[in-house]
Image (cartoon, rainbow, N blue to C red; front, side):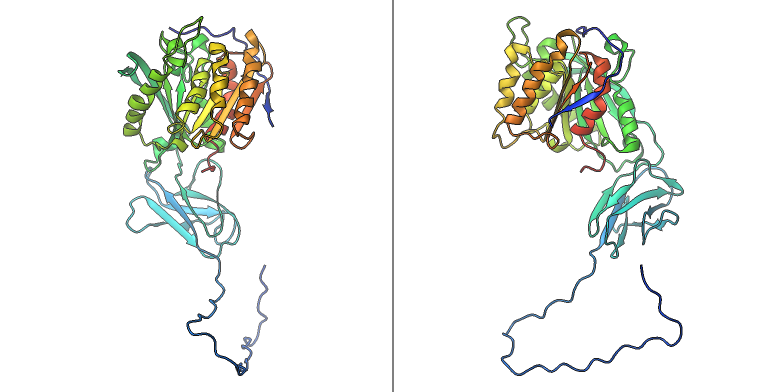
Length: 407
């Protein structure tokens, strides 16, 4: 059973960031090199034994592009913005020795940043151009055909022993996952999974539009492609998502719910799907009580979840317990790499904007810096429901997981 959200409002509202050339040879007889007279060494002491001569000046370092692709048939090549590449003529890619699906191109003449794009036959890779710096090697995992990811209730009845319960678990796979089997992806674990993808199952008929958001971002590169795991809530939602017991509402089983994710669900996801299981590529995200839970996880299990998104978190829970909890992160050697916090400022209780602003202050006091590893947003007119969380989701994910070329 779902816990009712606040009354829905459909008007969109703005977001307010709170923080903070070469000359040609003349025709005719070729020029001859000038004769340089020999240089005689003046008398004096010989150089010390073992002194090595100065090395000759070196040219530009080798710039290499490695394209990892196993998908549709066709010849792979590169095009780019400047010589030795061109937007009009393809440069072939060579299969790397000992590899089955890694194709390389290198040049020792690159002296500036180079924009480029792989091609499969005459089909450009999707998304924005890639960029390589001179003397560097980049690894690219492109896709050429797929324009949409896919989502499904992958586990209709996921059974947990850590938190005795049975629930559905949804999974979204991005376009590149579906086409290029060489690619692996970070994972975002999101709460209230039935509200994320499908209006038919979402509370009030209003979904978060997670798939639409990520499909669009795969085209413009604004958000790195990720796998999303949507964990459905149950009739025990209040208990499952709260870390302490509230005098009025009870609760306090968040540690068991967290253990279910870390010890039972995440190993299954990492075993069955092409994921990158590191904390740098693993996010936790949710809204309301799910936002409270996400903030709590960031404090206590950032060894697993290095990225945190807390949308409209229920900061009021247990006399604003989460404010003091976040304050304990100051000086901790392991803590979330990036944290996103937001709220609206309208509707029932103004979406808790006052307490959420206090929460943002706790993150700053713990050493987080706006625009670097922390972002706090207040949506003018935003209320506490799925309509507004869907509106804020693109910017939230863009900060939490970063753009395509952020790695």
